[in-house]
Image (cartoon, rainbow, N blue to C red; front, side):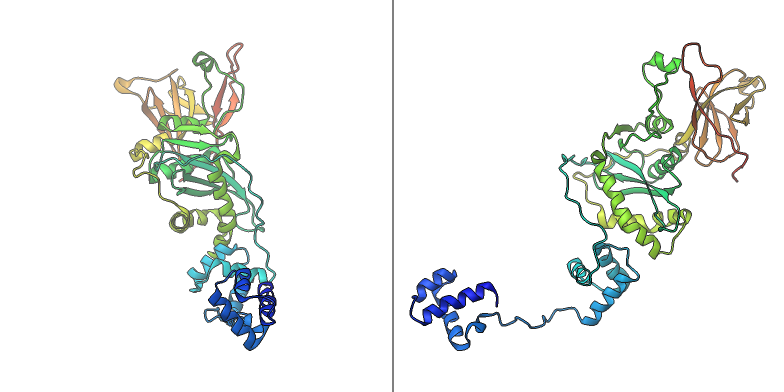
Length: 412
């Protein structure tokens, strides 16, 4: 018997022996006089054991059959051993038609001695940053290196971009490491699918912000350093970069990677995917929509701040940029790469002209003189530009420039 029932029995025993009036016992029990009379009748008929609830010890009619309980535990220990409780509950419904609650799954697992996948640490206090109210007002992006394809596979980096107002995943892709090329490809997916956001919240990664103290003569004259390759693209697209000074400041994208490390590894294994190339196609076709259905929330206001661009203009903007000087033979040389410049209007030559050379995401090259494209080069392998000192620096000034690492491989 429970403590409450033992106390009821003691009080009712005193009533039976005439030591306590029933109305005083009812007040002590916290029940009405009529209920006290019912309890006294049960006590006199069956003794203290009659005070226990009649359903005690009976099997509930809605209890899950024992065979299904054993099946859930078997699946938990075998096929879904790396899924957390909530994820496992969702997979049971989606893959096996077993609709049970997360609490039941948790009780079954803990009762069988299966520990939780991740121990929850006490939450630290951080000031809350309100969400932006409009879709596209702010995008958060980051990269997370991890063994995404299992402990026996080499690690790679998952690049992710989400909307701040809705927590909607905008783009996902696997890259070997967190590089400028990875961010450029990620931004290309977002721009083609939604457009350019108004701002981007990001950390201080070297692909996003310069950390050197070298100033060229032009930078000294303008009073500011030129941004990184990604910073130049954001500036041309009109996207405001906002730097987060701590991981907690961009907590939404950090928590997103916790969710991915908890769920995506298991989903990749269940889908039989073990290489980044196949995974990138699967992320676009299957996983991203499934994730958004589960975790995205409505924005506070209707509307969107994403700005669309013509595909050709976006392709020319999302590119790596280099500066070069056209040689006397009207050719541009860039790290061993040679691009011939055809004659301009009225057979004009461009020898000694200062030009901007861009490598697009398809690997092809464009040469621009005063915003006009004057030459096109064949596609070569995409690589992150290097920041290096110029061979002939200006006297007294640290003159640095972006350098292309040439490759003999040509993309078809």
